[in-house]
Amino acid sequence: MKLAMIGFGQAGGKIVDKFIEYDERTGSGIVRSAIAVNTAKADLMGLEHVPEDNRVLIGQARVKGHGVGADNELGAEIAEEDIDEVQGAIDNIPVHEIDAFLVVAGLGGGTGSGGSPVLAKHLKRIYTEPVYGLGILPGSDEGGIYTLNAARSFQTFVREVDNLLVFDNDAWRKTGESVEGGYEQINDEIVRRFGVLFGAGEIDAGDNVAESVVDSSEIINTLSGGGVSTVGYDAESVETSSSGGLLSRFKGDDDNIESANTTNRITSLVRKAALGRLTLPCEIEGAERALLVVSGPPKHLNRKGIERGRKWLEEQTGSMEVRGGDYPINEPNVAAAVLLSGVHNVPRIKELQQIAIEAQENIDEIQEESEENLETLVEDDEDELDPLF
Ligand code: GDP
Image (cartoon, rainbow, N blue to C red; front, side, top):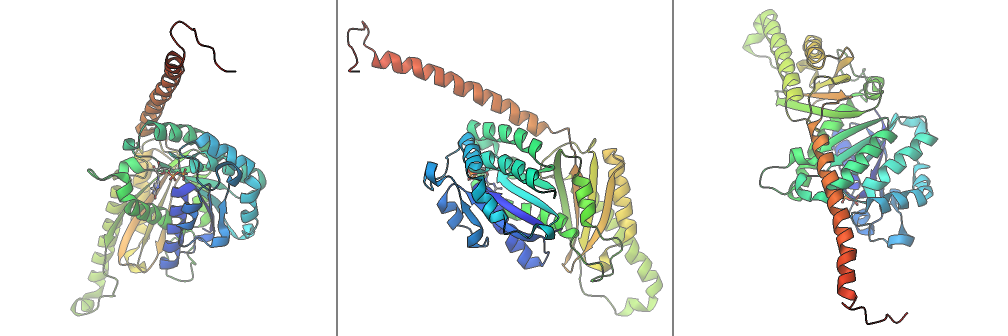
């Protein structure tokens, strides 16, 4: 499907930048337009692929291009005040050519955390196209304020978008490695997973002998109904060249074995994708809707495998709304991407909220104490001194 991507804040901008790179490399055609919005000039300048005209610096009067720190309330305020500047860039998007908007942001910081829900609300008021969010949760080692920001932004963002796709940095941190050190790899993972998913709806059925191609409307229907989504993914490398040689004499048998192998490979990939690490780890049972996309060289795709994988997902989720299809691409691997939409049983979100509440209480306490402590310091004990004015 064709998307207008808007990266808000540093993480948002970097991920949209990566999506453009992915798009150019694979020819997936998912990024119809890309915009980056930030309060920090240096972050916008660091981008490589977002066209310069589409980089919007907001809040210049308030923060002079230096960013908002991790103050997401200020991020939200600035987004509201300068929404016309953002709209100015959106005006250049040929909206009739896009299937949806995707607003991307790290929820733990300030600019993207506060600004992305404001932008989503604005887009929904003006356009009829769906507005999706891609929200990145902070790593648990980032500290209380980031967790508090993320918990508040998450709550607001979910309410303002048609669906919030979530990626949890914490689940992707390698042991012993700080999240920052791994952002490059993490961003590759984000782009690969969502790239396969959104790319599936872009294939021209005439290009390849596709058995059952996924259409944009199937992605939209899976995401409609709102809520929170997560994505599972697994891949296995395969030979791309067509095999001939000795065995081709017994082609009948060979074909049957090949077909059984293809089916088995697909079904096991689907299981590994859904039961392995999800972008937002959660219980898959109870997911309201799901979409299975199997990508790979056409000769390694078959309807039977996808159908079995789909049935298995129905059993595991308990949902009757599980769609599935293939995405023929000439890459040396077969991959299964599983979108689980409307997930409810997400322990990570509950944990995030708990830590956020503790951080909030801690901040309030320190603030109260700070006033008292300052007064004790500044005022003389017997109150004999008078201030100047
Ligand atoms: P903002 O510029 O004020 O919106 O804040 P940032 O985008 O710099 O940071 C917000 C959060 O996003 C951080 O707390 C991190 O959890 C996360 N983050 C920052 N940069 C990246 C990145 O390149 N990739 C990923 N996956 N997450 C990032």
